[in-house]
Image: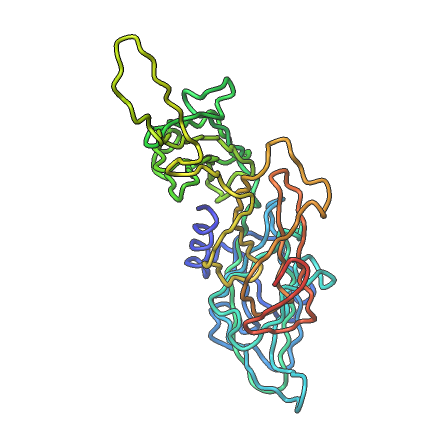
Length: 381
């Protein structure tokens, strides 16, 4: 993926003289730097050999020099002195506050001390159209430390659009077919397209029966082993690491094997004689029920990178393609069971395929550090 390759490249070439070097000192205080390639250092200078000094209070804003991109900081070193000179509540220990915007009036991504950010990534959020980050560093009169980060830019997602059909479908549209258990069904991408300037690099066919195919590419085949309704999806990914928002919902109806029970007891017949054979649906060996309208998704691999957008796709199969959500009350419930330590840097949103976003939690929390929280609020539990 492009984003991870960029981060790795910048991290390895942090000390190249061709890059922009931003040193947080009196000379850079209250300035804005536009760059997508460089390094951010404490007042000790590039290399982080000499530590910062006592009683510093510096502010620097870093903005992308590519319109539409956003700033990402990879903290190679983050070791602030933890000495606290204030007895009781409160602390004046060395700290850094990062604002999600071009100045300190923007919302914060948090305030950090000691080694909180060491080895982590901080990025401007999706709610920040400027793509800038504003960094405020404070040190007290006791003890010093070091920090430095590589500066890079990422490009926001312009989601690909997916198109596909069932080959040999039962209708002209090519989005539905009825088959028997074990019968192979063939699917094809019919013109999925990436956002401008990008290329598709990955095709994943999700057959909605617990299996998926990420190796066949544009064309895939699959045999379903159990009766039911399967709304097969195709997910494509471009070289910016972005996936499609729209869904195909290719309907595969896998028939339930009939049961001829009770079978006529007298099976001796003469030529030309008729016999009545009646199927008994209530006695089918496997009852076909389809899938419920609710969706459960478990994603336990969430990186602890500040400001990095983590997405989990939810495939809704309980609605027709023409149905829309007109108002918030149309959504019965969304329950999210999570662990997160700091409420002030947490945003939870759901996004429709049309791009509309509903925010369930918008940072806040008064800077509360919850450790492993159990938070009850709108949309959270």
